[in-house]
Image (tube, rainbow, N blue to C red; front, side, top):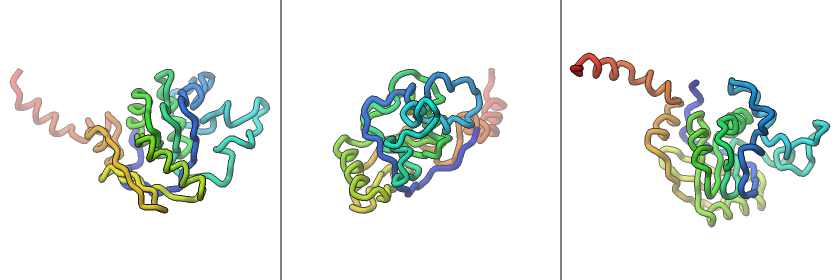
Length: 198
């Protein structure tokens, strides 16, 4: 399933300075019945976001109208717990294209990269600067530059580099998942097969 190409994202951000956010909080197990990637955003952080009667919890950040944008800024160890890929689906379906943290669980990071959500791991010091910038101005913008592998707090100009696997970077720049990548090099694969003796 192809997704939108990711190059440079400039957006305000939603701050969630909570450590050890696990995948069961990102998308509770009772919502994992669907097999398509649609509709999960409605239940992103369901138990933190809504009361048992379905009414929004006033103090949860996603229900706070002063925050918005395509970037979610989380605390250390974001996406821990079970390996459910639905957690990444929920993040994407809600509208986030980038998650920033000082540490990601490996499986969650890879699940994000497979569907077009860029996990940007920064130093704890830079993460703290981001949270402080958003606290000072909820509309402050971040610039995530995938080609240059940098994230910048535009209000101050402070910048930090981040790492990403070259293969996954190429796929995100082109909007490819693993199947799209193989289809894109189909002719090369066929030529190799035809010219390679058994």
